[in-house]
Image 1 (cartoon, rainbow, N blue to C red):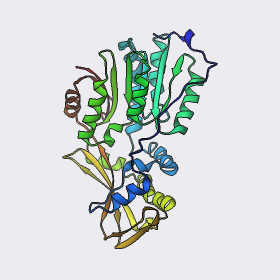
Image 2 (spheres, rainbow, N blue to C red; image 1 turned 90 degrees about the vertical axis):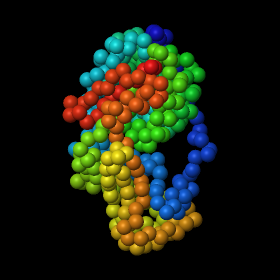
Image 3 (cartoon, rainbow, N blue to C red; image 1 turned 30 degrees about the vertical axis):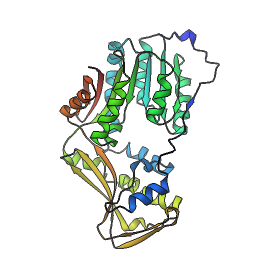
Image 4 (spheres, one colour; image 1 turned 90 degrees about the horizontal axis):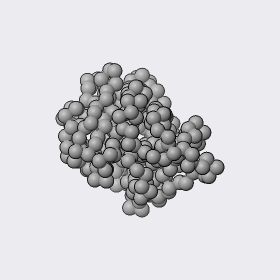
Length: 334
């Protein structure tokens, strides 16, 4: 256990910074590769420029977009019990920490039941990390903070080398839904391979439900999700000199029950040709042709159990919100 007296608040927080993988496609390469395919697509990772991030914050406040509120409800209610049931935890690591607002329910609860705690947020956004670290350092004197500016696995590797003790690793925001189910299974298996018996993995997972509820969450009445999707084309115009006319594309959402995925597309309203000098490509579109921009995968309880078994884990508990829309699932070594 880390006693609070050992934390020297006069010392600057030690940051971990891991440069991005040089093998990753840059934006221009990704646009050229994705739009020259027969089944056109753009990687959803490029949603989050400054304007995309602003629009996503707006999406989280929409009445149709229940995910953020449902997860926050669960964490606020369950955090004290989680802290009591897991007295062994000495550090909380968070993948894709963002603002860490919901995480604070857990941090407060765990700090109330022990003398000190280490929080290690991992994110690729320096601005988000700096803002959250400044707030948490100010509001929680007994919290040791080890931020990592890095991709998930690179940050995890650096943090594990620090020997932080038994850890609770958080993967919130239904981020697991951004991966295909085979890719999610592979990633969870990699996380599990480094877990010790006292460690725990806590994952926010959106549940399968009525398609009308799911489709409304990704295609709201005010059109904010449409603007978020269309911002990909606007970003191509801004950064790559493209001449997309956003009025000639529309946002389309479809829930595929077989895969459990909400699929998002940008559909051309007309025959047209788009020049993108920065990607060294000109792209023809037929009327009705679509660009696949995102899948958001939803899970049933049995799929969550299967995910755990495949990774050599067990589901310790699945905690649901009052409306039965979302689960925060806790995994342990089998």
